[in-house]
Length: 301
Ligand code: CA
Ligand code: CA
Image (tube, rainbow, N blue to C red; front, side):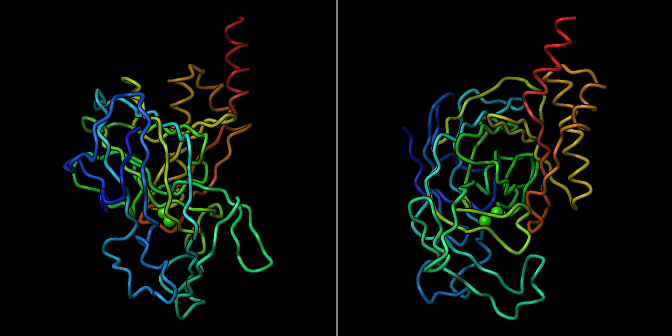
């Protein structure tokens, strides 16, 4: 298996980036990643003075996938997500909805062991490992790994977890996939400041789906299809996520406009991914069983 060490660090996803590796479609790649502070807060006693914020939220990559052309999708199966031994949780005056209540940043280093986060001596929280940043290279100007856009990036979606399949649009030849910013656990919306920020390793099987016409991130797990959309605010992101799901249901799943709209009415769940990044992200989740039932009915007519 191809392994990308975290020396291949990047702070912006860019068409101009030199690939860390070139792989065949269908290959598995292991990405080794830093936490969002590049490990600078792991040492006991370290503070934000030790973190160079210009280089925040590093990702590892990019990987060039042979045959991936603009207009295609990368199909990324998250085969395995492994976490480091310690996560960072912090809260403070500079970001998140609670910033006015804190005068100084507070940093906690929390061990992760046997599937639990050890909040203190007596409280253990079951972990839900997820990938915060995963993206292809966008067209035009490089996009900071702090921002989400249609190429993916800092989406902070809790459903980007082991077992899920993420589809990302290819904008430049080879796709140029990078990932990083894992969380041991994060509340939906990432509202207070951050997730439990942690280094790790992701094993991704990366394939190419030709000419789908999809230009935004789509996510799949056993039960659901999801669209992930970004916007200046939640209103913009929300409307986009709904329209993208509608287009996906009509275009890819061949539902009529009425069925697609009514399915979203009945069973589409809009969930805030995060409100702390340069653009906000939301996702719309729809159940696979209902798509399948509607299709089945239509085909039997
Ligand atoms: Ca993030
Ligand atoms: Ca993060």
